[in-house]
Amino acid sequence: MTAADISTRQATEANAPPSAASLVPLPEADVTGLPAIERPDDAPVPPRHDEAPRRPFGTIGLLIVAALFAFPIAWAAAESFKSTPDIIKYRLPLGWATFLPPHPTFENYVMLFTSLHFQWTLVNTVIASTGQVIIAVCTSTLAGYAFARLRFPARNGIFGLLLLTAFIPLEVILVPLYVLVSSMGLTSTYPALFLPFACSPFGIYLMRQSFQQLPVELDDAARVDGASTWRIFWRIALPNVRPALATLVLIQFIWSWNAYLWPLVIMQDPTKQIAQVVLASYQGQPNFPLDGPLFAGVTVVTVPLVIIAIVLQRYYVRGLMTSGIR
Amino acid sequence: MKLNPFSWQSNPTRRGELVVGPAMILPAVAGLCIFQFAPLGVAIVNSFRAFNPFTHRAGGFVGWANFTAVLADPPFLQAVLVTLAYIVLMLVVVVPLALALALLLDRRMPGTAIARGAILGALAASEAVSALIWNQMYQPDSGLFNAVLKALSLPAQPFLNVGWQAILSIVVMSAWKDVGLPMLIFLGGLQAISPTLYEASSIDGATPWRQFTRITLPLMRPSIVLAMFMVTLSGARLFTPVVILTQGGPGGQTSNLTFYSYAQSFLFNSPGRASASVMFMLALLVVITLVQAFALRSRQGETA
Image 1 (cartoon, one colour):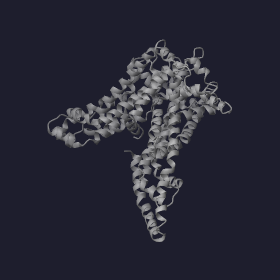
Image 2 (cartoon, helix red, strand yellow):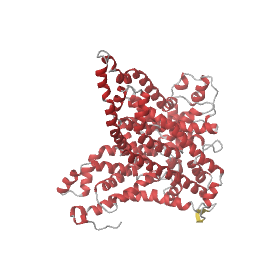
Image 3 (tube, rainbow over the protein chains, first blue to last red):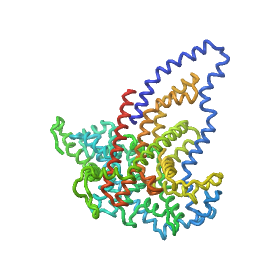
Image 4 (cartoon, each protein chain N blue to C red):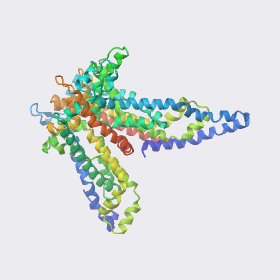
């Protein structure tokens, strides 16, 4: 799967024979040297010793870990059902009302979707994410298939160069990119939000890897039947890489949903701004605290995404591992 | 693109690929050239140019003047130190935590799925939203952490209002959010270790601690190297939590290279300094990436 895993496996194989060999004589010596009565008591203990007594502690540990990691988001969701004065009132003397709403109310959500017009912010975020996902899927599958299957000059060189862009941090190119997108007349437009990051080196790499794993015989058989390259790509290769497509869509969606720095810089029209940036503007309003709507907005933006990631964690984890290990 | 005559060009079924192949990669190549390589080139060139102080248009070349100006700027030097502090603290906090969590989750006991889901959930949440929530918990007068400290009769802490505590607060929040990725790498590494090694060594009478130091750690070394560099890179690029939690404050004490260059370009309108500081950032990331590539390659050479 990855370079690290391969080398780990190699290390395992290299180490396994000598240690196994050095351990094998011991049980035999036991058999000959020790009285046979003691063996049934002693022998099974070591492997079980590792498993059985630890289970309750392990499960308690796991539940503590789960609670710690789930807490901030769960707490924010609970706070979203408190009125802003309640949030401030019940926080300091620590009690159950610090964590749970004493007077549950939907007023934060009502305010969020009436006077704050957060629904438009959500629409903007969906437009930006959808645009990015669609373009990323198109460009990545096309390029991934060409890099995996078609032969043309400088193929691997170009592929390597495209992968290098994964190492260009946004922070480094932020100002020139801003100038570039502005000079294209795109400032404060929807395409400005997603166009610069729609071509994804991660997506190209993922799709190339997936197409490479398909058997070549599939292509050859179709080619013998007279199918064109495009037809093979569209009708045979693409339907066979659905899991990779799911991974690509999910990861690109989460990335663009969570983008902050670029929308903060390029989107100057507040009516087209995305959720992350709008939410950040709710914090620290000294005269008109928006703590309640802030928590409500955080819940609306985050909880569905987190649930999607957990439910689809098979694809999510695969995408993370591919994006992290190039 | 120049088409060279290759031997398989005579094959009629393959000849079409010379056109279709480049056509299929064209959108991706164009997109990445326009939005990644071109701005990178401009960023490098701009770091050697003067800027009009009023229009911020790039002017003539001034050699290393932007770099010397930045090196003479105390906030920049502080930002370099803060960047290194973030990297070191992230490594110290995240890598051992990720390893501990991976060891706990690798045993597949009841509760594993819940803990894994919670950690992945934190990973999927956005940095901005996470920082907004943690900001509420860190508030010195009404925050949750101080409420807990008060309930335990411990002195209240300023958290984000004092330099070193603010740095630690940012690191703790980032660790909570990002520990899942190195943990997944470690889980992959742990599952590649043959269980027979543990069985054999426990027959040999090895304690769990000895098994950990003599079997797990040595075999996990490639995963640990990989995770360390991923944490280093993300620590070097830390931005969103700094903007939302502290705005670089108090007194610039949490401002790292990323935030410094952002502030120079978008808050203080100083494009010369911004473009030079960005080059220091780029150099740092290139060095980290090259060291990573070298470390991983030499490890593979050792084991192969």
